[in-house]
Length: 111
Image 1 (cartoon, rainbow, N blue to C red):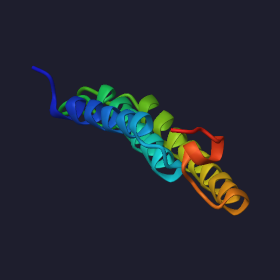
Image 2: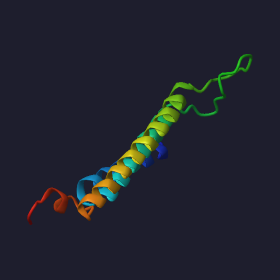
Image 3: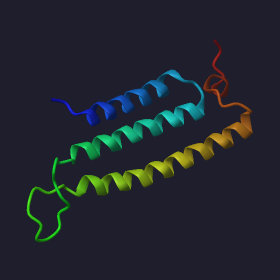
């Protein structure tokens, strides 16, 4: 049986992918990338989840949860926030230079 958190993470990745492909506004594309990043982080945490397990502490019996995915996701969150801040600052610079955030107008594409 597939777990609901796998479905949730796949749904977040799919929603983010749709936003990146379908939208033409830079801010919406950046937010779509952030939604995909959240879905990937949730998928990593879901893979490392063990039901009824405890933290790997000395002298504690039972199954243990692997702390490596949690450490990787914490690092990925910090990197994701930094990349999003950089992308938003670049979008602000583009808006100041061109006066728009629409990709078609920035690139000069005629419809």
